[in-house]
Length: 422
Image 1: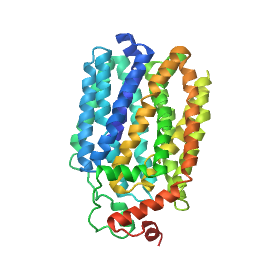
Image 2: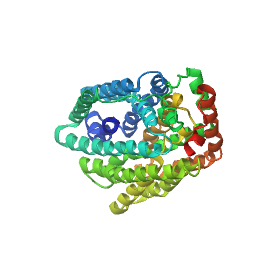
Image 3: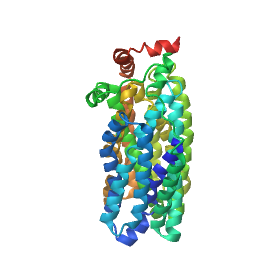
Image 4: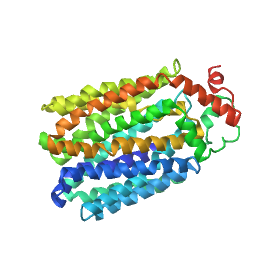
């Protein structure tokens, strides 16, 4: 159920990028204004994320998830009413506010169904919906746009999201908060963990160097991901002469299918490695981002369609390795009662610092040089992400042990790692 909701979460946000050329023609938009459309979503998504995370840790997550789905779907439909750049910018920003509740609530909920042994695989499976939604949003928005105009694609995606919410309203089940950790300790019948205050939530996160470094890494990784999503359709349309539909499809299909393989493999590999070392999830993520760099460089430099598609597939594959552990890794050092807040902060810094700057930065560089050069330069950002993950490995053992001690202190839960191992 969460997978299907996430599909529309990403299909809705991706749709606008595939109709950039139509918007540019109808509203006479510059490349910088097109970049602002991507950045506006990311800025408001990021600004709302910490508030959303705090709320998620204090209300029923089912309510937050379904409420967000109805809100962003209605805004997606309303986007079709845009008549100029300002109105379009307003609806893109509003959709960012609506979508910001989904991920903190969804990953927090899943972390209560899956403990350390299966958490990466579960969250890796969830993230495959991101790729399928991106493919669907990219292709069908371009297809509908070139045949019926760009407005209809927003009506279709938004309407289907509202129908999905109505169908799943009674089916989504809220687990006990902290259930996975309590089950690992043989205490699944214990009352739910008590809620943390706002101050306690931030303290639990900010005192962990691993959590802080993972947030900084997400800024870099999200910058690269948004460059791929926002500018690749236009890049293919301009440099390789593809139609809107084919540009939207090729910009997403190869990279996202490869990412599905990478996320599945990354989840499995991380769950296997974490049994041997607490650095396991970070090792998989570091492998992913460092391996992305050469493929990103190739994407921006090549003039061969064949090599471009190879580069997109390689970029997507290793991006999937990283993505499968975006939230599983910090959940190893952040206790259950603060995981919604952690996910909210991750999205805040990731989308404001990375996703929010990527479209406009690439637009500015493209205006002075080319989109291809701007894409190639993104490889440096991936190298920075890999370096921060290597540094985080120095702290993760200490921070994971500190989380166990914190749960003992706050809730009387015994050493979960030793209990699970025995």
